[in-house]
Image (tube, rainbow, N blue to C red; front, side):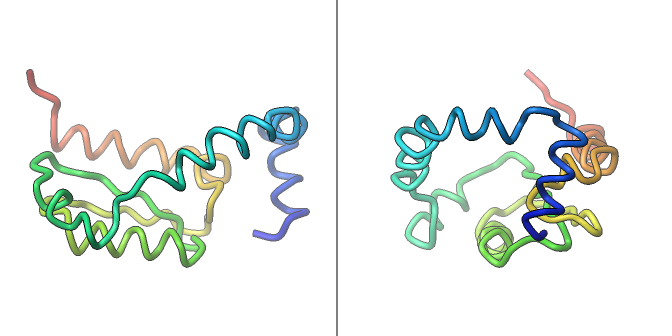
Length: 117
């Protein structure tokens, strides 16, 4: 999604979010991003992924960037009980671009896989 379209969509649907993101940039780049970079779940962790016994839902936009497509492929290849749902016409901002189908995907998943004690 090009920058201007993204900005317009955010301003329309989540007013003030871009300004808040700028205010929070120090936290994002100083705390959150380094923590994310330190977290590992990759080919070396395939045994850990294969040990997951609960059903897993992977939600992806049809216009998703290659990095997230690669993550989804990794999950498909390693997690034994995974379901993938692709939401048409959206990318990284999928819950903002098409909130209804994004909300319906986990609702259907949880109806098929109710949480038990």
